Image 1 (cartoon, rainbow, N blue to C red):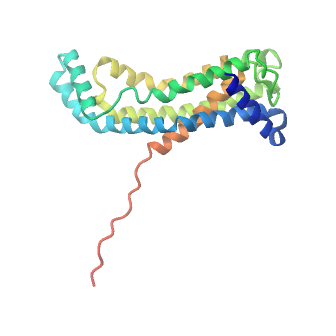
Image 2 (cartoon, one colour):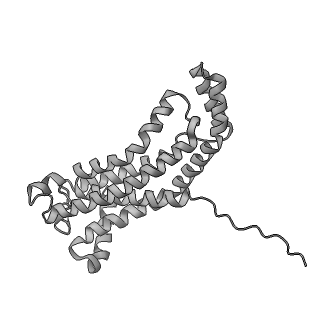
Image 3 (cartoon, helix red, strand yellow):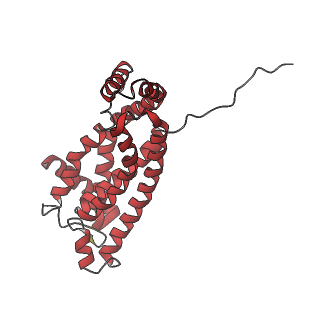
Length: 238
């Protein structure tokens, strides 16, 4: 952790001339982007896996029709199909799992650590939303910082919700079994859980979460974009 803390401090020093008192907050944003850049290859792999599962959805639907009365046989058949096509169900989880240490770093550094005295505008990076409410209310100087973060997260969550619903709809009946169908209903709503996280963790950790969420939205828009279709060029006849 000391290595990463030193990195945050060095970044803050470099950003001091531009951001002054909020230089450490800006350093957290840059640090988050560096972390996300490091795990981007895994995100690309996860995107390839998602596209493969979408491509295999019709075949999984056929398996459901064939083994619909035998859930265990259906599960084995789906796993065999994924293994045959080299599709890993865990690929989409790895980017999030590898970010956990960085999130915990922000949580501990600004929960009474050596960097806890820094601020984002009027809000202390080691403080929480409840503290902002007690000191000036939701429209106080610190409260307005949280309102801005909530607005950003709500917009990103709405975008992610709509996009995830579309992806789950593409998978359709490829979601094998009751568990898969339940996940298909719940997963789009998980994007709004970020609002709770921002409200309860120290502001530094919340800033990490908001930056990472924005990166994820932009990254998914790029990785899951529709392939461009160029107009066909037919040989001209004279």
